Image (cartoon, rainbow, N blue to C red; front, top):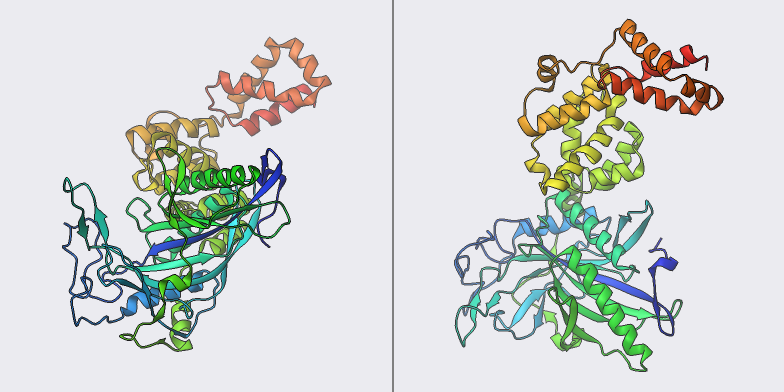
Length: 494
């Protein structure tokens, strides 16, 4: 199923409603120690031109040699995208002339890519999901980088990125809103991180997107698209799409036409601007690279890689729902980032009864932990509360040793001071009162002090929650809410 065309996805113009049509070409840097066709390092952050081989610099007579690990990573990614793996693919020369492209061409793939059609299931914030079709995934080498701030009237070239392996993952034009596009990139990045084929770090340029946007009247054929190049954050992808769609609508409603062109997004101004007219495939004069044989491997090579794939987000989500009774929304939140899913599973591993308390653990991880981390601007890796500490707090609730209210106080102490939750509960007298005599006394005192409320609750039993709250307040949250509830029903004759 493609992205649903909801009324909320339509843009109101002066002359009626318009629909966006969005496709993305995501460039993901392959996780490997060496470049696609040379042994030079792919490490980030080296001095300019310190990770450059003679092949990367296009010195005369230098021949490319394929890096098998990059091939493995591309195949693994294709399998993770439920895509067709092509046992034979061809490297082509894509000819264009930029200062940071030393060969005067890029080695890429055109008609015969390593990975064919696939799909990605995307979850939206409202709990719905849709499928984005994958057109292809091909391997190609990255260009270098032009540096314009090193000299007053000259530009410098850094070739450290030249020859780094990229996977270009081309979607079908299946998205109809900026929110859908952002959710797709988020899901795609999660899949790549689970697979370990790309670190997904957009700040370092490991993942960036070319965004194709067109508009049309609902139900009409596709309009002319414009491509926004090299957008390097999910938030910017959303902003670029919104601006570009409205720009095109204004032109069309004024009686103009859209020129197919390549544009850049300016995050400071929140707008796109023209870069050049859009190239077509024939402009690049593609032809098979004469220095590289066709890339061929066996089905057994693919099958072996498939056997070693990790559990991916969709599989993990389905397991959380089936085994632990999580809601689809909670499961989707937990699997969205690999580190978050690992943290949750570490909490489960530390529980005395994971099947019983898995749902409680999910609520604590999502609401208390993630909420606090977001508030403090911390990553899961920097959490002051460890998985084992959180598991101990949840176990204490499950045992009836502490109430949910005390647990929140305990969480705060562990967050700020650290320590073993069980030791803290003992040392600070935080145990829940289980002495039925003491609980009964507290209930009787509240009932005796509020005769008017007693009459109201007998007429309207759902008001019992007020009494429970008063007893909990009087005891400092140290009595068992369920025991209080049961006692009140007996005392009040409900």
